[in-house]
Image 1 (cartoon, rainbow, N blue to C red):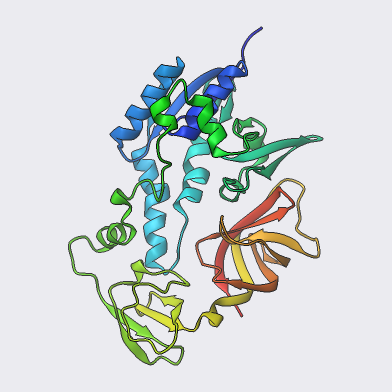
Image 2 (tube, rainbow, N blue to C red):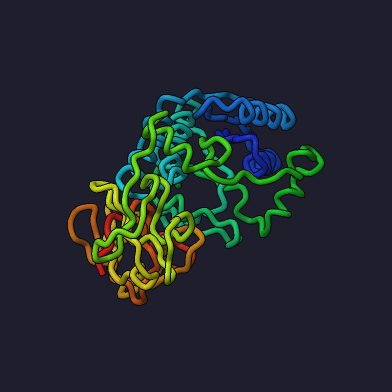
Length: 349
């Protein structure tokens, strides 16, 4: 019997290593691919060690320029516009799955796999993306944009694991040091995970950051800030002003380098505009109330969707949503099934 080839994204981490091992146990011919997005010797070395231990073919794809253009540049540009873009979403959409698909086509139209926590179910002739049964690790929020071509050849080997401890146990004997290691946190391309410093250097280099005003809703100046790149909606820390009541960031105005502060109640919105709308095959969002999330770990809300134009819609929320943030994704669900989503563009009232 000829083994089916699977191209798996191999990061050198616990999840991708366990996924590759699971595929080997299931009888696939596994080929590991590591994407060199930002010249990380640590990542390349770890992935190479995993591939060698598992005895699988391993390739490194150098894509630093494309990663810089498709992920890092839009991330920086979003903050310059007062948004809070999600680089993991950009990377999945513009880099990982496109590159895996291209490699699969060059390898006898192979299947592809990643270490994401999500599930795929075939219903009739269509493939459905589902949230992971392991709700604490679910990553379906970052994958809403995957189309039928990708879903039809995609495997999530971790979809049946109920906990991260179970995943660790899978590779404990083969890779004891890796299985006992810490999970990666933060944004992969930001050194020391210093978000604010990275953005400051990316936008202004060695030049001093232009300060601007904190103002209240009426425009009264409350104090000075050290650059809008260090703030996002709902933020309370780092305001460095005297407060007689609890104030939060409620608006970022890049055109005047101004940050508006107000009481937290202002953050709650009942209407949210989204752009870049993507729907899974066969979905039209005409149900009376749909479940949606505005961040991975956030609460699920109910809302009605009104299409405004091609690629845009407005979500009328049943209950107010706290700080729906421009640049973040809004993802629709029916139970565990992912219906699609879009990027938050603007809040109304």
